[in-house]
Length: 282
Image (tube, rainbow, N blue to C red; front, side, top):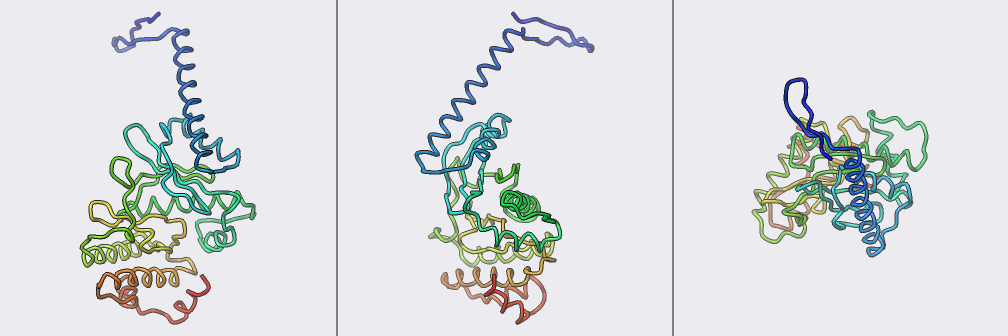
């Protein structure tokens, strides 16, 4: 039975009965359980294994309506797997770090030098949670300045962000693109690196043709997990390495560029030989 009620401002609205409410609640629970079953089957098919806590947090994304459904795996690596998911009519990328196989020593090195974070303990989960929080903040900052996915949600070892692609098809990595105005692309990337440094006080730290996507002929920076703020003790060696990687790729595309000139363009200063020598220790 549906009851018609009248509000204080004389507007009429519908109230469902308790029986109807229970029925709708059960229907929603059934839909969620079906989605969970489908998701777990897909994980099994793809040989993806996660601990129980991670699976519960992924399931809570469905229950909390942060995600409508998971629709496949975009990329699977040693330390993380990226799922494609839906949020209504929009697509999301859900990045899940593997607790068992992450490189905690490297993570700790990048986190401990960041004044935004203070690790009191060195447990695996605490390090991963700080790593995800770091990537979440970096994406938030970067996406306001340059082309980068917008971060939506983080939960322990899980990060939800905008999906980069067309109608659920992932945008290609720069390394896989065949036809492009390479001079224009390099100019855009160069300007983005400078804006990130000056306005965002942020250095990508792992920039290369593998972490740049191309959508509508425009470069989009991704994977900001290793990104550091300019105050970080490793910021300059990381920036030099980024400049080397970017220039090495575009030289193969016959673009006239030099990593030392790129570094000077971004920072307004010459490379310190000590910073350059530190690249081998990264």
